[in-house]
Image 1 (spheres, helix red, strand yellow):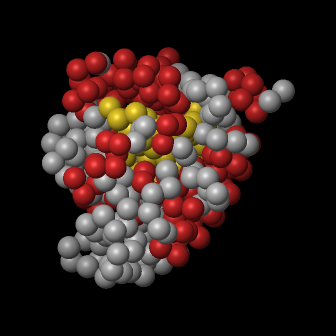
Image 2 (cartoon, helix red, strand yellow):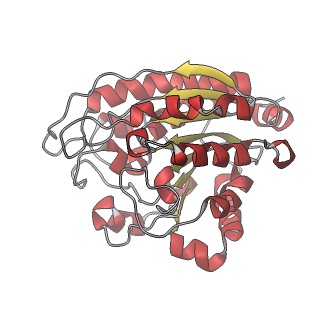
Length: 316
């Protein structure tokens, strides 16, 4: 029995959680202090996420320390550290998928998608697709990025853009081919420094928030799944940046953008993806507990993940 067929039998039976408490892929606060996205996995666990999901908690993959408080010219911040961390995270994600069937990675900044993809490819034993659900395209190269944050170029690096070890984590081939990517929900049309020129030339399925609103979120999910379940792919990964949500409901993020789906609308977009038998896992990124002192945003994310990952009749 092949890997995908095995997962079709076990998809709803088990779920493994991995903490990726990393902020090394994002620029510091304006004060110069490293951001507190590393506290996000703990904040979500404290609200009972593991218990709500009935999941197996496989602990945290602890990142190296923050080094590049000042951006290296033309390079990504903390490049060696993120390269090493991606490899370590990939090993834990692969083990989680192999043992539990589906991995939920709690970040952390968007750079955790690189290690997640590395692990998904290893567990699947071949090429995978990527649903990139984010208010920003993150398609920049280190040279194009305004901040040097890997979080601003994570999708670009995943498809092999840029002259950096981070774009070669997959070896001779990128972590994911452009034609195997569905980019969903971006609202960064006025911010061309996210790699928009090259994105427009690429075969990435680009469905900005305006397109999802026009088509409907359910139809957007169908289009994405058509891309993500191509016969040559062994499965797909889902990257969820909390800033894709409307900042009225999710203000505790690094770069909020007006508009975007409510929690309920996001469930309608993501449910068909998360529940598909070829889904390997999901990473959640960019929630910042330092911007959420009363933990209202954390509680909303726990609700969202529970709604997505537990059968509706089982949601408490």
